[in-house]
Length: 313
Image (cartoon, rainbow, N blue to C red; front, side, top):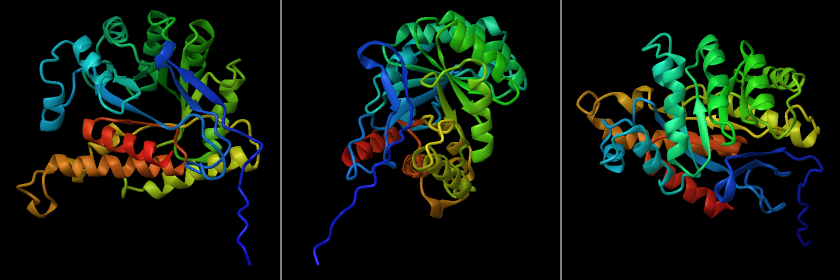
């Protein structure tokens, strides 16, 4: 008997969110099949890969990163170099100095840094905050105002601060925001619902539904992403039909495998190589589970994951 293939194409689709402007704008989402199921139907917008660095500069302790950013001293120069990384579609700046548990840099200084980066690049920009809900509530609206017209993505709006960020960033200044929840389909949906109740329409948001490095409880992340994508497509749940963006770099480059010295664990091999492998493994797993974009740190990871995406599309 001849085999008859029945493509699984859904009438529902993930909404499309555009970040950046001009020819280098990036479209996220829009698919109506499962991740990489191009054998069922074309996927117009392939997953994107971003390059991460903080306002303190790139991690020059890693030889590969130090070599890539050699000669780039100012934050603007670092941003420009980052935007030229092979395979990177956008740049992600983490405003680490503003963390109240760290330097607690004044909002105005962090905003100036964000503007310096935005002015130095011609690719889309993602701004990651401090992770402190109160500080981000004060910081991100000011960043949104300063970068009006740039169509940046601000990460992240949480349950504790979404009102001010959503209204100011999206409605007042036309930016995009990420809804961040904690590895649970119900929490993700609820946050999307309350953000939409502020008047934020589809196409103005993405969702960050949680992340973990591969091997560190990642099965919960994969399960949440798969359930969210399944509900969006097979159940036509419009509150979950939101592109997923996953910032991986900070998580991966802080786990034991990526930081302990080769002297302590010689059988594990070089530190940088381990971190790259961990970053690639985590990124690929996130993309296969439903993420529409991943944010990585090492140029080699970015190059490898981008090539994999290209080969699969």
